[in-house]
Each structure stands twice: as structure tokens, then as C-alpha cells.
Length: 84
Length: 355
Image 1 (cartoon, helix red, strand yellow):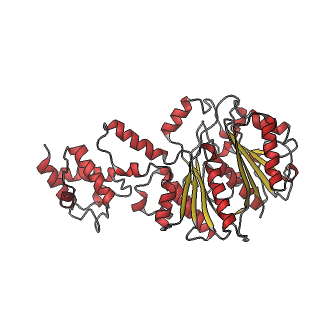
Image 2: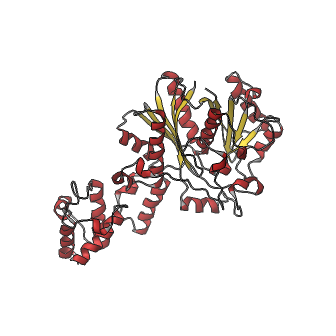
Image 3: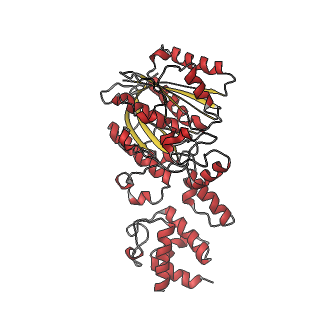
């Protein structure tokens, strides 16, 4: 799990172009949207594409994104559960 | 119909961030491509906004911010842009993603930033400016279209403060494609020696030149746009001569009133002959200048020429590096005529005068 979280940190920094952040700056248990990293709806779409492209996981119902992308850890748990 | 330049923000391959070009700061480049000297964007764009912006968008937003500050304007009455290529970098990124991923996994960011009016729209969003917002895309007359629109608006309401700009970027892909099409010189060693490298092709460039223009006089104004006109594919030398004479006559001027002529000479032997013919005929005896060795060739380079002319009129000083001949530039410098064309198709005249 920790290895996947580290990998996700690097991927998120690259995909969302968080140019002034290092993987160590991202708390895996802090909310990704709003108060935590401060991501927005466009970032949510980028993360959906990331899941599909890099992990082969397609989110059928966008409403599920709220739970899946709550923190980096919930995202990693979802990937672990659903990756084929 | 006049437009006074109240503020300037300019990003170019030269040290133009300080608004007036200084002879000792002229930058020399090796090769056939000039890239902008970019400022520290942190001062103008928050990190959370900056991370999603393409390079040209960062240049545009910063230059706009600098220009507004320079003019002391918080909210412009209109945003009018000219661009030949728009958000070329993001367009390429989006198209590449379509090809690489077989039309799947397409993300929104580069798509929503791939339209030509992205820069003008983004500035409006950041300023919360709901007023007139227009982007002209018309090859090498894009800035001219924006300027004409600005001047027409100011003739209706001189109190307006309009954010006017010419902006284009040179991306790797576009440079490569146009290089293969023979646009750029292959063997040039130094941009400042552009005219010593005879033969076809020019040097590639880019830039973001922003102006706050208004119809109101003010001691801080740099200069004024006193005229703009364009013509298409002239069929004879006489047609060109007549157009230039008529353009000046419409403004109650003749060539005797022009203190400096800035031409769009770009080193391409296939097209520069039109300028050199004028040097020996209609412009004979006049001090002639050129500017594309400083900024390179790009669709809105006339906005860089306008910035250059405004600085010359404001400081009453002309950098020697732009002069083409030995004809003395008489002081005071009152009127500067910019004559630019690209591949003898779209021709443009811009007149700038002292305030």
C-alpha cells in the first residue's frame, strides 16, 4: 500500500502539474479537494483519466469519485481493490 | 481616431520587461530561433493558477498584469487581443494526446486551453472583467485588427481604458514544420547579423506585447497610435507607393513629417526586396530601421515594433542597432511609420506619434 501511495504522489504531481510540490509534501490522509491539496473539478477529471489510463480502472458513476478521491489513501485502497 | 498608450507590459526575446529598450541590453542569439526572456511569474500568478497554465498563457497573464500596473488601471473597459496561432502549445498537446492514446484518456486542461481566445478570456476571468472581450486571428494582421478595433472604440468613447495586445509563441513542433517549409535560415550564427546572411528564410521569434490605450491625454502617456491601415496583395509598386502616400495624406501628413520608418525586413531574400525598393525610391533620404533581428519573425511582431516605436518617442532616443542606413534621425522624433508585410500578402501601416 505505501509503495502505491508513493507512486500515486508522483503521478499526481506530474498529471496536475503541482510544480512546487514534492511527494513528501502530500499527506496521504489529508483531503485532496477543498482544504487539503485544494484541487478542483478539473483536477477530478484529470484523476479519473489517470485511474483509467494508468490502472485500467474506469469509474462508471462520477458520484463515486467523492469517496474514491477523498484522500490519497482512499484512492490507493480503491485501486488495490479494483485493479484487475 | 487616436489611441494614447498609457501602460506597457512586454515579454520578448529582448530585455523588454523594463518597457524601454536599452542599447547595452540588446541580447544576441545563436541560431535561427529566438525565445522570450520570461519574467518571474510568481509575482503575477498564484501557484494554484500557474500550474495549469501553458507557457503563452503565463506570458500573457503576466504581461497584462504588468501593463495594468504600469497604467494604474485595475479594470480595463475592454480586452482586445491579436494572435496568429493562439494557444499553439496546448493545441499540440491535446492533438498529440488524441493520437498517442487512440482518442481515449483525454484530459480537459489542454483542451479548454487550446482555443485562440484563451489568453484574453483568462485575463478576464482573473480580473472578473465582464466587458467587451475579443480576439483577432488573422495571420500577420492579427494585432492590426485588434488595434483598429481599439481605435474605433476609443473614437466612440475616449475615456475607455483598453487592454490591447499582440501575442504568439513559437513551439518546437511549429518551428519544425515551418523550418521544413523553408521559413527559417539554416546557417545563421547571430541574430544581430541577420542581414549579413543573404538567402531565403528568416529567424523564428515570439512575444507578448500589451498596451493600455485610451483616448485621453495624460503626462504619463508613452506615445499615441495615430493611424492603422492594411492592404492585400498589391499588384504593382505604384499601388504600394500610392497606398502609403494616401495613408499619410488622410492624416494630413506627408513623408516629410515622418522622422523614422521601421520596416518589417526579416532577412528573407525572397521578400525583402519590396522594402529595399522603397529605401531607394519613396523612402529615399529617410532614416530606415528594422526590428525582426531583435524579436524574430512571428505573426504579431508588429506589436513588438509598436512597443519599440513607443519607447523611441517617449525617450526621444533611437537604438543604433535597429538603424538600416546612415540617414540621421532628426530630433524631436514626432512621427514613426511602421511598414510590415509577410510574404508580400498582408501589408500593414501603423503610425505612432509623440503625445
